Image (cartoon, rainbow over all chains, first blue to last red; front, side, top):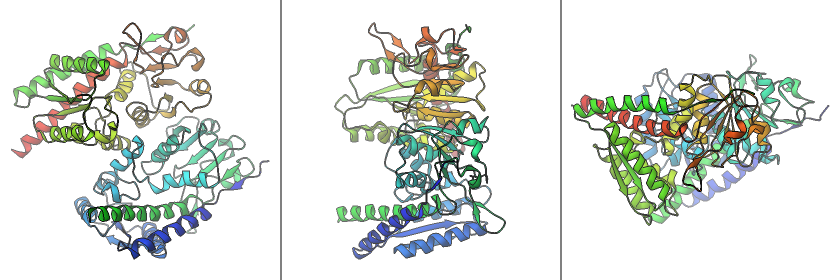
Length: 290
Length: 290
């Protein structure tokens, strides 16, 4: 039996929020109060809960957060227009397009209307392409949180085998790019992967981002593997559960991020940190122009 | 001993060029003669040779090809301006930014000045991000040629393990995205990968795109693996050699693309095919506007 360490994200999130609060205060004092806009177009309850939690976390850091609720029947053109308008508004520094969106609206296509300098959740295709090409851009916060949690616990990445399970545009694919940029040897697995357990068992680090509760068990791991659980699957009792069967992997994995309390708090903290970075860049640009 | 099949790209390239020629003639007859612009800023001999070969191949298909040679001392801003100007020119349908570029010029950053609809070699970060997000965009021709050669020889991809050796923005990374979109389980390996031979030996298909002559040998393959050689390394006698040691892998690999005559001819044919597709889109848009 291996002692399985818990890779909490809470301490790192606390540090990030403290930095963000200091920077938000400095920017506010010098005439650039940081402002985040969240565009939402859904009646989805868990989305509404998440948006409120971002707004609350932003407020605690001294970041203004405007919620633009376009309603569940918003036309894609109306969403695009709002994103374009916010992109042009010099008082707004960060823009998030919340999902789910109404039927017929493509989140990636619409997120292309967010100016890349304000795309604090790395949602648009230009941000994704710049990230992949190694050019400056904000990474999707969840993908960056995967790397940040591993870094916070001093887990080396260079030369290590990492299996990313899940190929979503918002998590799996950008996480793979970030890990590759850190010199990991990265495999992206997905629902069509044959013999997933054999594949993940050849990895030093497994990143579970498939959105399937309990997908990863002890049978999927080599002894001593590090496991990052990105899953946030709702449970019937109103809680959250990850993609990893924590009871199963405990005693075989060397370390596991908890759900909740692992990747999640770091994700929110990174979104706010990106927002003050965007505000600081806007502030410097305004200074240079003055 | 396995009989190692040669996965030639010439026949597929010939078919693509024939389609392209028919389409170019149709577009020319209806008032939209397809036009490709190649922007170059180098004194590199092999680059000049490659640009001439594209121009010649374009001419044979009925595509006009303009070479904008800005010279080896061109400033990045001058390159960007020319790309912006060509992007705005309705008579130009495809734009290629040839590498190498002068010191201080970042190819990916500059390629961002190419309008995405004219980015026929998928060089800009927006094209790369759209490709990764599954949105319509031209893929880098070399990366697409990898998949096209495999398809032309009816080699299935879904559910298969593919190792891409090399993580360049122009080949390895986009090839990985295209293979992933075809439901392969894709690993990207690179110079910092430990025990490359063990990794590639676990793959059904190995794509060698590292730019290192003879890197892949029999020791890197499982018996019956399919090998795609993307390497085009110059030899002292003025020829080309791949990243695969063909003599070594023959008898162990099930199939291998030759160098030259494998991925290369398909790459050039795809560039021209993309150009007529871009011209056809521009033609339809002009028709709708009329």
